[in-house]
Image (cartoon, rainbow, N blue to C red; front, top):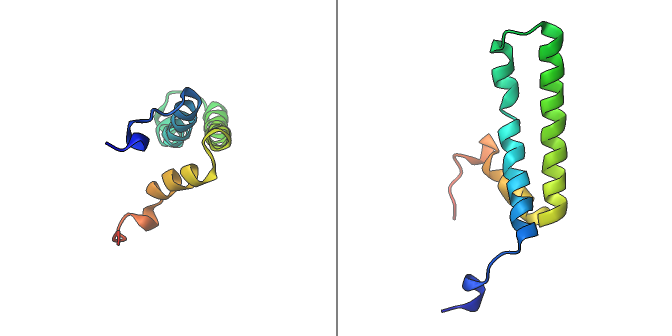
Length: 87
């Protein structure tokens, strides 16, 4: 068997991938916030905080795993690429 397939990824790489994936989860938080029973100013703070946290988390993950891997993940979540055929 090929050794590169058996090679385990380092812990730091896994942490970076987790941060990138977690940043996409945070992006969905603003969709839930309008339905929370809090004031409008609190909702504005929550949405803004979630968007800032998502971007910071994404870029920290990019710094850890590298630009190519992060852009590959980001292309998976881009709606423009959902219907394109893989060739």
